[in-house]
Image (cartoon, rainbow, N blue to C red; front, side):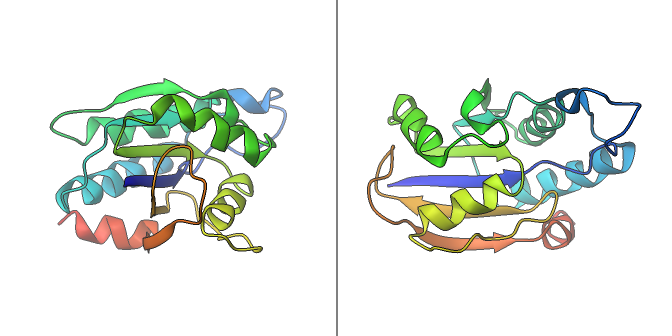
Length: 165
């Protein structure tokens, strides 16, 4: 069994003239602070990760860095191009084949793609909406998954921040 943790990136700077290249938009100070608390909540409840696969966009990579730093034994972080916005879900699932020996894999990405991926992994036709900084755990039999997984839990950022105490 493989534990997949789907994580939406934290609050980022608004689109606009300051960031003509959307891929370069960073997290805001508030986004970084809130995500640190979310990550501390994950670590406090005993979650461990073998690897974090992240969209190559700056805001997702920054989120992955914050999550990894919260753990006593930080997992490796790998830029995973398939998590870029608007990548077909089949490409994401196929790309997971390289991580078939891992048991606890986090995916840091973007909406609406992450919610659509969660729905697909659960065998649903509708997406699972993610707030910025939300995390869910879906257990699958193997990587890449060939059958619907099981939703173990879904946590809003506020819930995870509260768990850090």
